[in-house]
Length: 124
Image 1 (cartoon, rainbow, N blue to C red):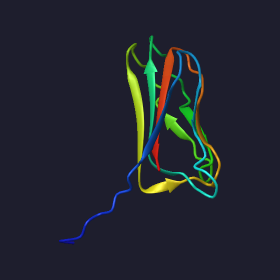
Image 2 (image 1 turned 120 degrees about the vertical axis):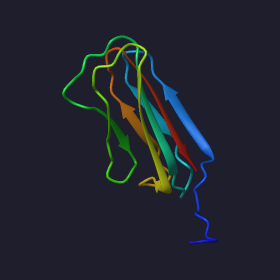
Image 3 (image 1 turned 90 degrees about the horizontal axis):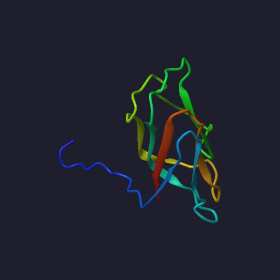
Image 4 (image 1 turned 45 degrees about the horizontal axis):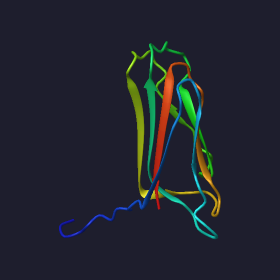
């Protein structure tokens, strides 16, 4: 409606991690403190292929801890040329709250041949 303003959650922190080629990656968002939850506004998962990646019939799964239901996210497992990246970006408004307070939240990507992972999480 005219004159109304949409409220947006503003992230005040971001944590990133990058893996070496052919290794898995765990991104850990440290606990917010006693009796405090983490509130996530965005996740970004990037798969960078360093050499020709052969397609597989199963998607690559990124798993989580300390999110309600421990959701897992799929990222492209198709054939990719060297120097290609595949991104999965998830925005949350309202923010996604961690399942438990005073607990680390993790995102885990498996080791993949010819792959470098980069992950980021924005939160407050």
